[in-house]
View 1 (cartoon, rainbow, N blue to C red):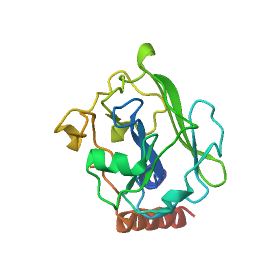
View 2: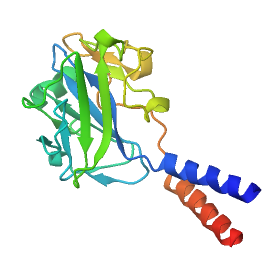
View 3: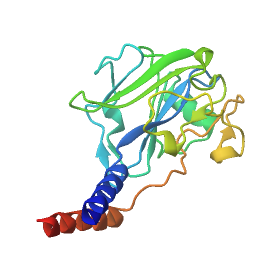
Length: 209
């Protein structure tokens, strides 16, 4: 029984560390444009060629995200309705931050959804928010960064808070929007840690036999 419990714990640990790309921040309306941030929270690079985004239409392939290409562990990329160059300048982002701008076919409202699909059209992440219904804060000119402990949740909570200057690395854009697009301080698992846990899981399986 002890071995079984240990095995379950290790499997859960490995699964939690195998997290793929997630929705990590959003602002539905900003002077410098609305935006959605996606972050690779896994330990290996991920190719977003063929991946797509959709809002409440929930239609895989709605907006192609292939331009992001290879996303390194811990890297964040930005989707915005603003011109990419203007958005980069407004937020003081370096050329290394990948931005897909001028998004006009899947724009966000106060009550909306954010869907992320991989190249096989499988839904990888989903966020449902509505400040009027108490599902998340009103992200007008202030973004909301999703707490790492809540990545499993598909609905924004009323307890989630708006970004403020200096909090969670947030700063103000040239027009006074507040957020931290392209920046994150999430805990990213190291490949060695996952290898050790995976090896331990295999050993326990072998011993159980």
